[in-house]
Image (cartoon, rainbow, N blue to C red):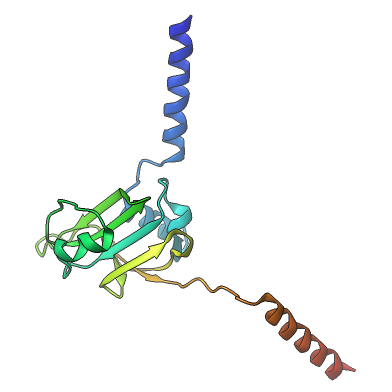
Length: 168
C-alpha cells in the first residue's frame, strides 16, 4: 500500500515536470517554435520553463577571461563561440554555446547588436528576425516605464479637453 502511494506521487511529480517544461527546451527550438506560431516577438521572461533572473549573451569575440568576471562565476567552458547564459541567484541554470562551423551552418540564434549583453527577466522582450531556417536574430525591445503616472494622466486629460473644445 505504501509503495503504491509513493509510486503514484512519483508519477504525478514526473508528469507535472514534463508537462510544464516542453521537450524542446533548447533556446533555438523555443525561438523557432514561437516564430513558426506566428509571433515575431518573444519574451524570455515568460517563454522559458526554468527560473532565471539574468540573461547574458557573449559574442565570439569575448574570451572566458572577459566573461567570468561579468557573470561572476568561474566556468570551465570552451573558449570559442557565441554563448547565452541564464543565471538564477548567481548560479548558471542554462548555458548554450554556438561554435563557428563554416561547412555546415548550425541551428542557432544570435543577437543584435552582436556583443556582450545582459538582460533582467522583467525586461527580456525581443523581436525575432528569421534569416534562414537555421538562424534567428533577436533584437531587444526595451521596456518603457512611466515614472510619473500623474504626468501621463494630466497630459491625457489636457488632450481630451482640447478635443472636446474643438468639436463644440
